[in-house]
Image (cartoon, rainbow, N blue to C red; front, side, top):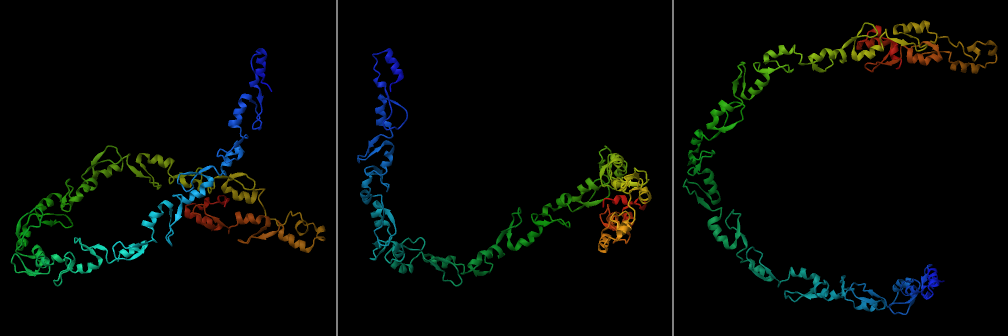
Length: 545
């Protein structure tokens, strides 16, 4: 094929050589695109993945360029790094020979029973210095040969090892076998004092000095010549505590006087720096004798003093401030309501009885506190304990919190008949249901039953009514008479459930006030305990029970 652009130019310029612009396909079909003649040889030599090549390692193998790296993985002449880490690169076929002498190859120790594995270059040093299973001679010159691992244990008992004397500050070094004899004469060995009863332990070279000067169990006399004799260890204590001829300082801080110990008792009776207790009962204060008078006159909290406002009361000094602030009738105080009135505390109750700014508690019994000026409005609009007249006009005075309960009982409240939904006052509901209501149930046993027979009164069907069906129907008929289990009253079976739930005087009902259960015929008496008059009691309030 010929390049079209070159062919066109060759026609316009015939002298132009277009042979180099002919295009060819790679002979190994490595790619679908076409190549110019001038690019084909470069492609074959440098980039064609399917062009055959000789192995770079000169092993003689022939393979394509894209499989060359796979060939390197098995090529015997390909150079690879030493697997033992020495850093050398060797032809793959020479790895075994190199590994046999590589100094970085891990080898087992030559000593019998030694489990250590070391580098070949460290094997000699390991055998010479570290191997625990190599026989070595004792370095102390005792002549024994033993495993290096047992050498340390041997040195602990080697008789020719040079050791240091164990007594502090001695410092002499000698063979272990000579240490026992040295211990008997070492001047730095700690020995016990030979004096009876002396627990002291001193160096052997200081023992004589200790016995003559320092031993606490040597008998001595008092240096003040008071006649005392005892052990040396008790002499200092005698001078410090008991000797009557020892000069001592007054123990009271700040006094500083010196005297013989035998004169301290007399001095203590009059020393102005002695700490004494306050003479006032209950006062825990401890103070110097020189400060006692000032304490009683000025600062003692338990001294009885008169009220500074001349109210006539006497009290402990610590209670004066509280008495003046809280209880003294002569203290001038402000009105607690903030009206600006000031007067002695004894005159404040008379003012507080009329002050509109004083906080008072509701006298209706609700427990709320408010300003006296707000009390009337609170009782008129908010107080749950305030008594209000019945809105229905029955004339009863009812607390605000019981208004809803009263409306459920009030005979003047307009209610609906549960059967015909006619509106009327609650006190008229009973007579209406009993005499006027066309929808109220009546007691007419079995009247209206459509089954015939003994219920419907259709005699001509009686001859075809089996006795077993008659007995069964009589037990199931909604118009047959049944007896209430609570009060014994007889009525139609279809009214029995309604009677037991809403009308039976022996049924249990729940008090809407306290929550307890009572019989219906005892409920009127029970409700009087909650302040509900009997004439206000009606079953309408229990319709939902």
